[in-house]
Image: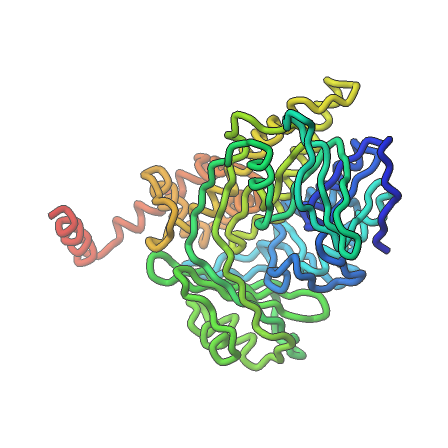
Length: 476
């Protein structure tokens, strides 16, 4: 049962804006450092797995990267076992995933695993754990409408909340954490306190996706848990994922860039699936029983608010999750990046209180925002690097080094089709387990280079002549 504890002004208090996954993970971490933590959530939260207005993308496919899963298990020991008991599936990424890139990727068992389930089930399981934390309280049906501060506006001291049927109420807090997502109002609230507007970087490929749930047909002959078909720049932008989730269901998400949005009618949705580069998703669902309408979502731009660059930032305020950096959801990094963010928050608080035993929070906010920006850099590069492959993407163009690395990654993937070792290392980078520099290690780079030379030198005479002609045409 979700609860609201009696609020006390004498105990150390942290307040979290937003009961999202990022907000709940932040609250769990904050409960280690503060005597009470309040999560202020606009929605009324369901007691069972279910849709709520504040998560319009919940009915679509979600990917929990292994690094994200590791952090969830660290914060909530045994969560994976609970999810599986509730119907989720444990997925061995290299053995249980059918993925069509330029060809089908190899399949073999490895130690890269994650969980397949709906966003609603995952959020509910986390919420149950947080609700059982006696230091954390949920304040539902409440919307934060502003920040409270001291007279000089140098420190945030709490929030003003609008409670349904009760009106406005002020809550004081030692630390306020904004985890309210893409709809965050922190920028406007800071402007009202006299602070500058942070720089914003937006990279938009105008990707849209549509999803539908299906009942898995009886005796369906599958030996996989996830099937994916990827597009191929510069011309074939359509792709899709099929996830096996709880209650013996499939969750199918189709997507494309440049406003080539998947249709939301049944015939159009199926035709879009049929148009993908490999037929596996279409063949699976063409005779399957749909159990939901087709859901559409198009707010997918990568957007980074650079709070870390502000010369002035108030004490007592932290901004994290999508409120700072929202990534294209198709990259599958959002939940895992939020999990990484709260680990940074935990570490910053540990160091803060070890240096300031009287619980002085001076310097914490700016230090956290700087460290968060460093952690965001890798997932941002991965997400935007893919979006910048398309000429129709707005907000930036790939520089020489980005194009060079894109071409190198393409060669890694080509070699990965034939080399399980190379493919596994690529997945470890994608799952935020290893840095991209791992792909440059000689054990990867040398075989990839030799494979490239081999492919090039085995071209027929007419292919070589054609390449020369194209090169001369571009030069003139």
